Amino acid sequence: MLNKLNTHSLPATPQEVATALKKIGWIGFWVQLGLLVVSGGIILFALANPRLNLKVSNPMSEAGLFFAVGGLLVLGLSIYWNWRYTGVAKWLKVPHLAIYPKKSDVIRLLQQGLLVNAVGTILTLLSVAASIGTLLTKSLAQVEGLAIDNASQFVAPMDMLIVQANINTIIAHFVGIVIASWLVSRISYR
Image 1 (cartoon, helix red, strand yellow):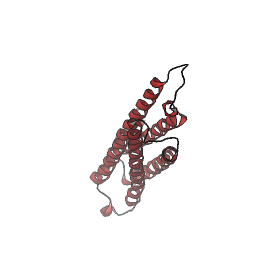
Image 2 (image 1 turned 180 degrees about the horizontal axis):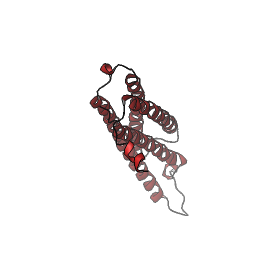
Image 3 (image 1 turned 90 degrees about the horizontal axis):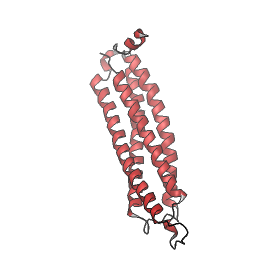
Image 4 (image 1 turned 180 degrees about the vertical axis):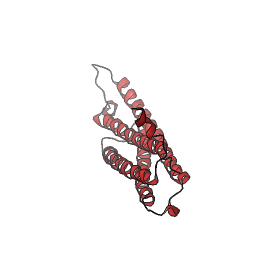
């Protein structure tokens, strides 16, 4: 058992790093792409929904959608970053040591991936905060037993879908953070 723990502290060869970058890069690429498609579809549906009239709605819902779109755009950049990991893996598999990327360059790429996902997480958390604020405002405006003149005061299923899209985006950014962190800890070749 102790030997298994110690093997991860040994320097990894460039080929081992390449294998990890390729496998984990593709896993991150496809997981994040799937979550981007689902979340992006929900947000596009919300923006195209005629019942979601942003001109009359709460300014917090406008901010929520703005930050949600920002989080999705950054998620697209994170997907590109995962694809770049697989490109670095191809370079590391070349048998000539002279053309290997420097260890510092690979670590810098992974740190940039961490930063991209951290920014995306922050934007999406701001979107969640604004969306939850909108839901709270609407739910507090509803009084049981009384008729409501304005239907926009009701908590609509679309409001909940936007929250779900934001949660999916946060999960996707979390996957990116975990992948980049694990790869940084794994890269210790000479």
